[in-house]
Length: 430
Image 1 (spheres, rainbow, N blue to C red):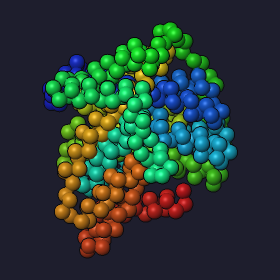
Image 2 (cartoon, rainbow, N blue to C red; image 1 turned 45 degrees about the vertical axis):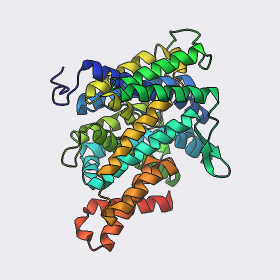
Image 3 (tube, rainbow, N blue to C red; image 1 turned 30 degrees about the vertical axis):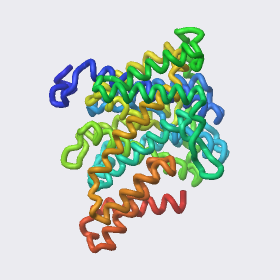
Image 4 (cartoon, one colour; image 1 turned 60 degrees about the vertical axis):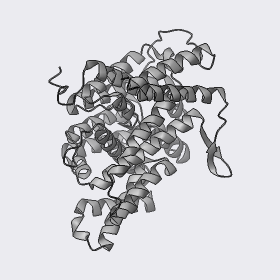
């Protein structure tokens, strides 16, 4: 087992990997509650979606751990589940069965792109400075999510965003957890982020900020309302409107996952010669989990940027992902306990992880103006647009433009020009 996951080469052990897997799971666990809440508004059965969410995370996390030896968790994407419900089903009036079929078709296309190593090729031709910018931008994005979940940053009519009420009980709990995490990290305590989440949860329960679960074990909800629905609606997706939806699922999921993998690989020190080892296998695992998720009954899956929380604890191999998968399997039986893992509990981990990931900024060549502008826009637009894919898209448009303007057009890989053109078309037509 140690040899299979390359523990010695990556300087890790079972305890560290296990702690990392549990930490990442706790940072991702909200998806088990939030995904059914969002997708049920499209008409889907909430219980079935819960089970589908857990099963797709089990499959995806296990595959990426065993096939690619990556410390990454895979589960239904938060951005794409909102797009599925509020834009496609409610806004466009598309039945959830047809929308889910669109997710399935996009997943099949993902698998084909992965098998032919097209996705891997695209990721490997991304310039080094843009890869660092993507990792740093995701760091700011993750930190913003943490600050928002903690209630420290809130919506403001006058300034768009502003400071929240720092004396609000839930926010105080998040600040307490943040302080404990900093103390543990400063003292070099392995697993400090995980321990601080446990301490915050216990404190939250004793102070009444977190409700005690009524019971420990729960029955696994029936999957039949959503399972296999996609196979009966394949013929319903061949309209310009729905095909545009399929393209959007394909586009956003592709670069959300690409961004997450680049960020995670960079943070874990896995990048070699500007390439991600086993990238093809990682992308294939992600694609297969997307297809499985659609068949089971959930929207598009993606590699979670919250995986960086586990990496901050020390996760470096696919054994971390195996633990994540096991935790999701256990969660099927202990669903009542998930309610105690509140956003305020996980917020400190996201803020600290964001800070660690933001250090990638120092690796960007800031003396090169052709890199500075696309790198800066990539970084700043991820949190401001609340979308990893949007930040990547704008950076990819600006990079070849700047290189061409400076007389270095031939130094840009042709794929980058193709991607820039696709992104421009995406912004115009989608």
